[in-house]
Length: 62
Image (cartoon, rainbow, N blue to C red; front, side):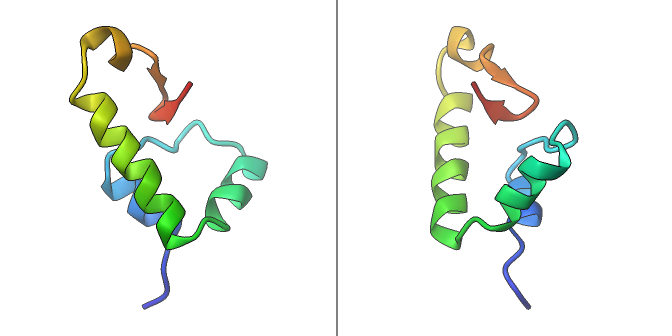
């Protein structure tokens, strides 16, 4: 089965419903290593203080 960045990020709890078509294309071009890094950062932020978590908008980092 081919690597699917959208599926992997969604399974990691990153909400991609607000992502536009151009952003989706960029996400689809991510490597496995890049997706793993994003998932790692997402998990670290979720485990951090609520103040940091408040800056996670739409599942993406801002």
